[in-house]
Image (cartoon, rainbow, N blue to C red; front, side, top):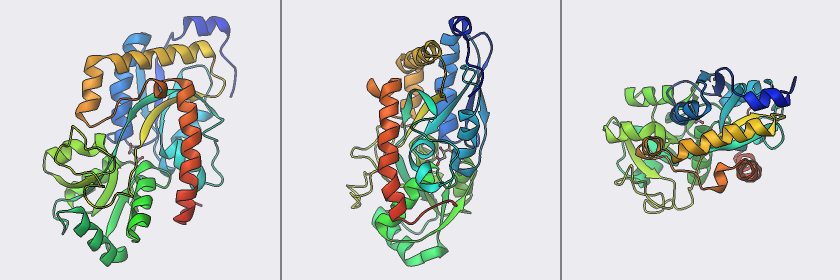
Length: 313
Ligand code: MLT
């Protein structure tokens, strides 16, 4: 923490552009959500929200920087189920506690996981993909965005559900990973729908199943994992906005108010829904609701990842 903004500053906030740290490379799902929601928030706040991509260590590098920034409302961050759910189980020396070191603002969007593969992957349904991945062992490569990322946590969970051990290939975000998937230089991954939906619709990669109870309206032909015979694989990631701990309540309220207006804006909603995003519920959009979610997600992912024998250090 640092100098806490005075009451007067909180009243006039914001008087200059706001930095939003996205802890992954540009073009990935977290970046996409940040830019869509941030654009409308800028209008309400009357100041530009400038996205800064700070990649590395599965998103924990950027979030650590955000957690240690001045709690004055001028540095916020887009975290998610990885950085604020899985990371503590994977990084014993993590420099932040997702449940204590932030002023939660609210959830920006749900991003269901889709199992995708390169176009010439030798399978056209989930059962054949699973058989091929199990038979190939480490000869098949799974892309992810670093230990602690959503794609890594959901990929590790997938591998443990199907009892396989593919080679895990790390990228600075699933934006760059998707480029290699389209080039065919990496085999498959479990990624957030807002990243892969356009490439699935464009026929540049293959989709096998979506890990949610219902199909996505954005990908009506992609079966659920239950329909495809892997009911045990359900993952519903989310991306959410956080400010550093100690951010004055009036500033948290202004940021939350701008988020609520963005999520009620027809054009913003359409952009998120067209990519397969899921709009947060009313309680998920509140600081209190997000705090509860972070606490439950840290509790949920810790045993799953420990059972899978994964740590980053
Ligand atoms: C990204 O934006 O690249 C993703 O959120 C990375 C991930 O968590 O898999």
